[in-house]
Length: 320
Image (cartoon, rainbow, N blue to C red; front, side, top):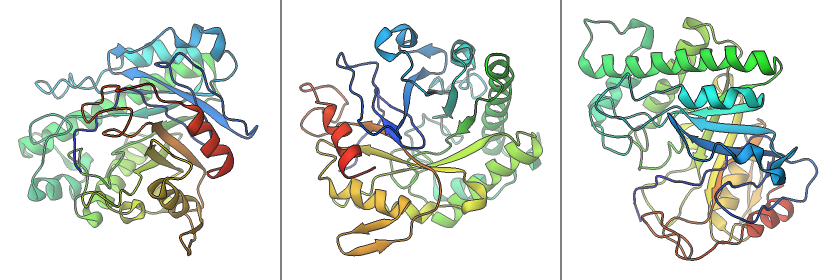
């Protein structure tokens, strides 16, 4: 089943995971002491819950914070990337994961389709080579990536004044093995080139050598032919610092799709098959009940409350 998978509750994490959500009243904490916790704070210029860090229930428990640079403004490609949230998050002095659900450079929002030809053009063009003589498609794309570079750099400068040892992770093109974003489910070799080009542009051309890259795949959904294996799009270890799994499940402890994808990324045995894993630090980069399941409908509206202890138990017992 394919549907618009824009999510409101996102818990972005690295290393291992402790579960926190600003949108549920019961704060649930995973048991393992090795877990590192994180909380997603909002998008672009509209932080969903900026007061979360003042909640006494979270004091000392949030190690990583996350936000998305995109504002979902598709009329202005430059204006679609905002650093307003970054200015609010930096004073927390935390390790940070940054995403950017940027609009389609060919037109439309982040969930709109891009033709294979346009995707190939974007993927195979070095960003630093795009100029005013390039097509509008490429100029739109560079405008957004250049703004992302600006905002990450500016955030790094601000964050350094509060915590010079904090790490910034960039999580580009997440859930690339699924079909709901314009960058998803395209030719895997072209996607790898897309990733390599943005890595080289930000790290080498823009000089953000301190920036860490997080490869964040969606769980392989066996009942949805539009979701491919998590490893199909992996660009190579030299371009990735950490790996993550976006796992939405009503029963994560027994969910075969989540457990299979976890084994692929981390290593281990699932259903009689042994996987080597990628040898990178791992985290659940998004967690929550299944969209279109028993707790959340296909429009991401809550049907009934979800017990987040299920996620905690799954991490402790099966996904540690």
